[in-house]
Length: 199
Image 1: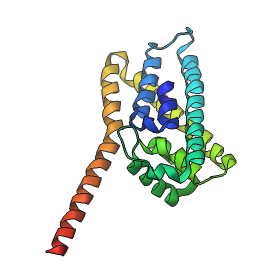
Image 2 (image 1 turned 60 degrees about the horizontal axis):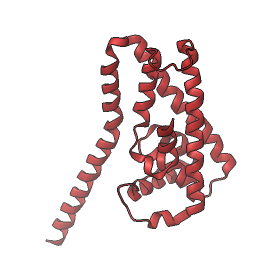
Image 3 (image 1 turned 180 degrees about the horizontal axis):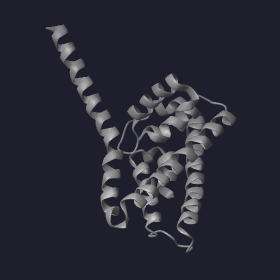
Image 4 (image 1 turned 45 degrees about the vertical axis):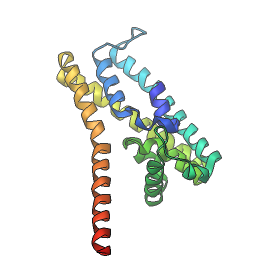
């Protein structure tokens, strides 16, 4: 719960594994390895979803408040291990292109989900409009990921839980890795073009 809140609500949460955590939680609920109240498996899944949806929605609301109050100053903040200005700028460009639906789409994009509500706050999006996208996106993200894990657990069985978890981690890490490779290749290409131009 804390990780879901931190990833969506705190600027330092951009590196947290939200997708893989949610899918893994679904797998573990299916195997009845998470059931503190002794509920039926499906009731336990629904309760977990309700709690996680609230955390995801509250997290985005906190992110929006940070952006609304701090405003453009965030773009001048030094990049560090706990704050990535380049991710903030990339999310702003995505927001400019896609508008309010960015709040929903970013839920399924590592890193962007941390910065999308902040960018909405900086852009002074109407809170009424923001909360609509926030609720829809938060519920859609949490429910789709946990149910995916739940049904993967049903299909593959308890004995393969470890393999499923590893697969989920690999899949969730791939988009940022691919993005980093693309950025590196683009900067290399730009540097080569600049060098050819000057010679």
